Image 1 (cartoon, rainbow, N blue to C red):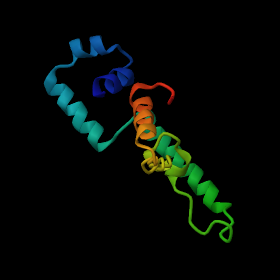
Image 2: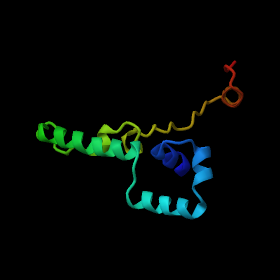
Image 3: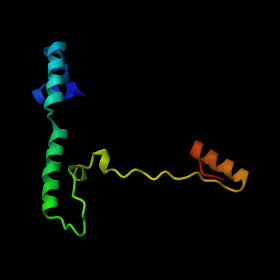
Image 4: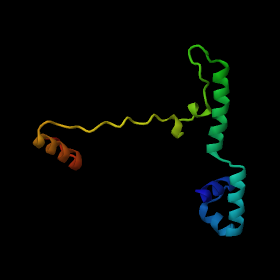
Length: 112
């Protein structure tokens, strides 16, 4: 991904960037990115901070006692996604019905 970030930042294709940048310079670019990241991810984080600040200024602390976080306004962040509830096993009383249900789940067909 670093080649794509760098090529985009320099305004050239990845192919051209690989031709013009040797591995020594590329390592320096990676180190620089580690210290001062750039790109859309950083822009999203910066925007999340600004929006969270604005939301917290106008937040009703009685209705919502906990403050908003930047991640609350960045849809792609994992922390925003609600984890799916793992359903428990489906256990049927009849062994044949259980077998049909397993076959349907494994092979993608409708249970008989």
